[in-house]
Length: 248
Image 1 (tube, one colour):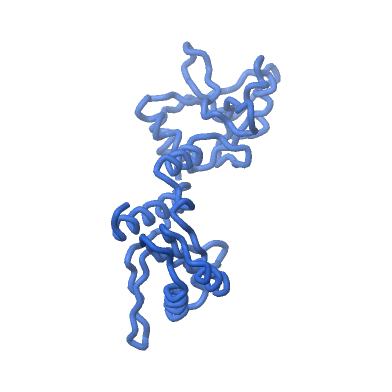
Image 2: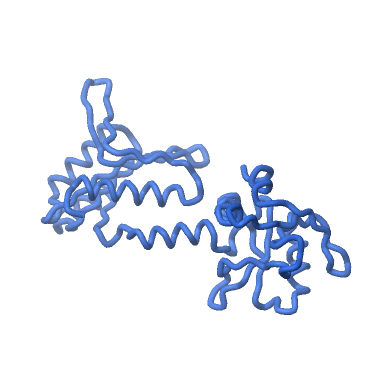
């Protein structure tokens, strides 16, 4: 990153990626100009806003790819800028060379968040986050609407990303359960159950799975019923039909 524009472009990419790992569709804009009724106008390097539980969150980011640390004058200038733009805007300064000691105190006093170059994820880190969010099973997830059985990571309660699959000669490859209880019953009857766990599949993980399953023409089996003998009633479905019928 040799120029301010390149640094700003990368920071924009990082925030656009991190804020949309689960398909939230949050728009992150660059060089946003705010025109006030007074006739004044202010520009911020990066800006985004989103609403959660009826509360609007607004964030303005200033990028400084300077050879020297940012001084307190720049902090005060940025603070006044976002104060003039409107209320309840969170200010963030990302400086490749950090801040002067006095500037950090000023930033803390005015609630400005300060990040340096090492706080910003690299491309491999972003990719790892993206893969984990989209593909790796996590214990806290809820089925939307499916539950599945996945290989369990030996060192944690999370999955490895490998799905439990039927034998090769089966008409379907991966079972998806509408009921968590059915998935748990089936799991307890597996001969190597200690190597697997039941996970919920939210929509963003279903989307990640289908991105791989559709090109490979994976066949899924929807499980609506499980019998006392452990057998299941399967409804075969292709990956493309699964996308059309269940991906919102």
